Image (tube, rainbow, N blue to C red; front, side, top):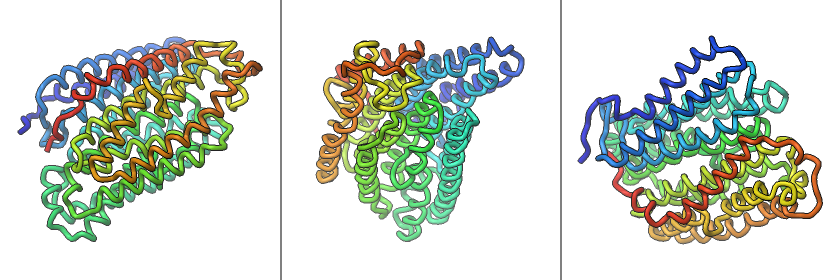
Length: 472
């Protein structure tokens, strides 16, 4: 049983982020251009306080609030900590590229609003609130993708927006159909109601709903925007797009699978397993011969979503699904941000060959790159290794051994394109593009690498804390 109340303190991390965004927008209108960084500092304070509040809430009992529309449980608490931690990293990546920019304060505000949308998606127990979270996570991200206002940035924002708008409409249509089938939008009432609803109606509604959520996750078949949006946007924004929205979307998928659709007659496990298989395979195949580093990481994120969907596919079938997804999501977030931080630290190095001689010029930065790329493969002792192991175990436990085997094969295959980046970085020849360097991004790379390894070594005590039943 969970307690139900309407105490705003139960959503304190979200309140802090929203208040900081509003206050930052007001401050940005009055502060001189040289002091717009104070808005970023305010955002960092809000994110840090939100992490503390989330940790305190995680130690308390599970509860629902605001008419059972929002729940605070291990899924919500972990998503809060991961998303807000990612916000701190991205704020540091924004520091130099947007310093004294005419719209510097707006970048910090838009980042916070997008993160707030991800948090809403992660904790919601209502389809209407899920749609609101989707829009809140999407619209600021569209703006950030085209912030440079150059050709690639405009193309990135346009493709991102058009696909997001189309799939957002399909999502709203799916919610409408599910409401017609179950006469409710809240998960506690909708889940039991769908068990007796017409299967065709439930299937149609679920497909529409998945269209929007999979878009935010960047999974096949809603993945077409990812490579172009990542390549066309600035590297810090690309780090944001490939990390923060995915956490909220994956948490929402886990909650939908376990609390609403697992017993509805809809072949949830089969649909998600096909999406997972297609995402990891197509992402890897497309990444094999990429030469642009951002585009390579974009396809890498698509393949990573495939692995992350393994525990989602067996939601309701395996007791390991929840802790596997939450741990893997945290591991992926910090490791992916570490890789993008290296890209941000070397803004002139856009191709794989540009990284030649990095180990000689910047040995610590090269070590961070190698650890993060091998971490994305799943090399011990990094956190992604444990995350993949847990995901494979959940798939086996849920009766999807074939999916775990396919994921293992894709993991081995992915080593090829990561090595195409690592080999030039450790070679003896030197690239001229290594001269320019972003120091805050370099600090993020070092920190993210250390956290990735530390989280992997601390997996023993961390994993049990991620268990617990989903509210509702």
